[in-house]
Amino acid sequence: MDYRNWIRDIPDFPREGILFRDITPLLGHGQAYKHAIDQLAEQVQLWAADVIIGPEARGYVVGAPLAYTLGLGFVPVRKKGKLPADTTAVTYDLEYGQDVLEMHTDAIQPGQRVVVADDLLATGGTMAATVELARKLGGVVVGAAFFIELLPLHGREKLSGIPIHTLVQYE
Ligand code: PRP
Ligand code: ADE
Image 1 (cartoon, rainbow, N blue to C red):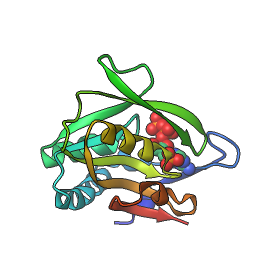
Image 2: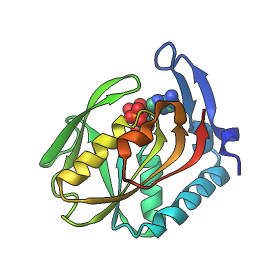
Image 3: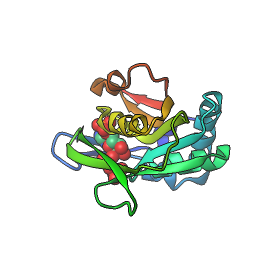
Image 4: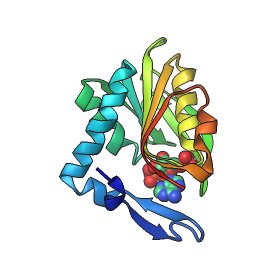
């Protein structure tokens, strides 16, 4: 299945010069969405994860159905100030800005095998911060899964040593 048919390009969003890869058409197409999740799940199963972690907000529409499909728990990583219990935090850079991500300190047990999931790998800043949060709590990051990879931004280099699986790559 060519997922590009359901990924829409929006020039100059959210800032001039950014070509935004919009996955909402894919999410809105039941068959394409299910196919994409099932295809990622096949790979994630091979990593024998205990838990899936996804960053707010688009990481949830990939990570949560992946976790459900595989019968695993899902841990939400959220932007600053949203999680109610004790948190640990990391500041990170985006293709278009800077932000803080947080995770509950009891969300991962030391030694648990963690897979991180998101819709898109751009500079890798979001995922590097998510990996850092997981490792702070003793998690062992065994893989990273995405719908989309933006190759010119070299996000993979920020995730060195972690197996990465992406469904669609853009030059
Ligand atoms: C987007 C996207 C990834 C991240 C990728 O999220 O969903 O999480 O950017 O970019 P990076 O590899 O350069 O870090 P965004 O921060 O726009 O938030 P959203 O999911 O709430 O839209
Ligand atoms: N997140 C970071 N860069 C992005 C892009 N170009 N399109 C969609 N989401 C993004």
